[in-house]
Image (tube, rainbow, N blue to C red):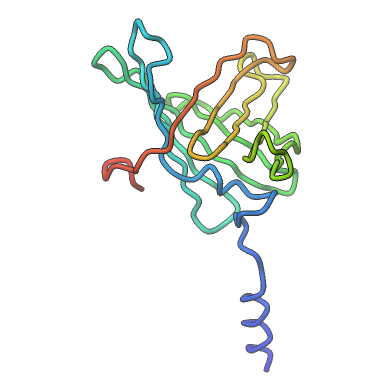
Length: 168
C-alpha cells in the first residue's frame, strides 16, 4: 500500500521545468542570429539550451565570423536553496553567478506581446551585470548590460532546427 501511495504521489508531481511561470523550458532548443550583428565582421552567434530532468538547465554558446571560430561559453540555470541562478563560464573560465530577479513573466494578457522573459543580476561583476532573455514566438533576444541598463548589447536569435552536430 505504501508503494502505491508513493507511486501515486510521484505521478501527481509537476516536473521541475514544466511550462509554468517558474520554469525556463521556453528557452530550450537551438537559436542562431539570423543576420550578422556586426556586418563588417559577419559574426554569427549560436546558443543551444537543453533541460534534462532535474533542477538545472544546460546551455552553450559560440560565435564564428570571418571564416573562423571566435569564442564560446558554457552556461546553466540552476536552483539551490538560495534561489535561481544563471551561471556563465566564458571560454571555460571560472563560473560567474547571476541571481534571478523574479521578473519571469508570461504576458499572455498583453495584446502587444505574448512571450516569456527572465532577467538575472550580479552587481558585483564588472560586465555584464544584468543578463536577460525574452522570447516571442520563434525569436529569442538575449541582452547584456550594466545594472542600470547602460552599455546594452542585444542578440536576436531565431529558432533553428538543431543540426546533428549541435544535439546533445
